[in-house]
Amino acid sequence: MASLLRVSGFGTVPGIVVYGTHGAERWQAGELRAPAPPPGLHELRLSLPELCIAHDSDIWIEDKGLSLVIHARLTAEPERLLEMLRPPVDRLAAAAGLGVRPGKEVLEICIPGIDKGTAIRELLCDDTAAAFYAGDDLGDLPAIAEVTAWAERSGRPSLTVAVSPGGSGPIAEQADVTVPDPQSLISLLRQIIEDAA
Image 1 (tube, rainbow, N blue to C red):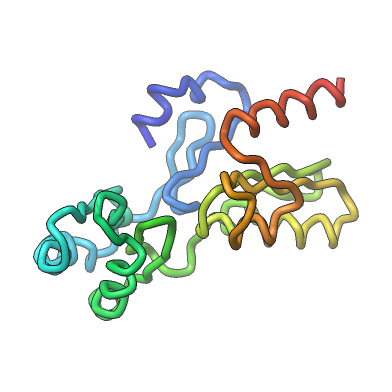
Image 2 (cartoon, rainbow, N blue to C red):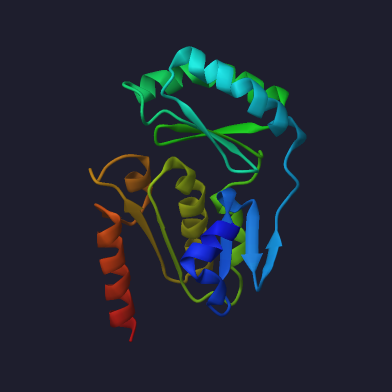
């Protein structure tokens, strides 16, 4: 979270709330709320590399402090490899009291019961006039579902956007609108701001 705030300048924006690690971390007005790292995570830091390298030496593990992400993007067949890794990773994570969240060419070992929907539930309140959410990976599905459910309950406007080069997939199926890339998302945001002015 500290590196994001440093490079983005978000910390200088009045009233901004920044979430990290799929909703596990929350930064607001200079204060960071985050749980202690789960004890089982340390054991996995030691055991995962051997398991992953045994399957493919191009797999790498990203340590996010509160989660571990197994990246298969550099391998020849990332989806097949992750399919093979999923059962043993599930077993190791469960033994450590953790969960596994799939993503685009990754498996993330994480704190169970916390996802991007957690952050959205905290942010949307009685005073919220409208909601906008954009995402590009499976981890965004809980947040899209929360925004949609909130809009149905409240009757207030919302817009969910899938960033998907092919315009298809689970995120595109659930979102209201699909754009092909981040630049198109920025253009859409600018258009919304101009229309609202």
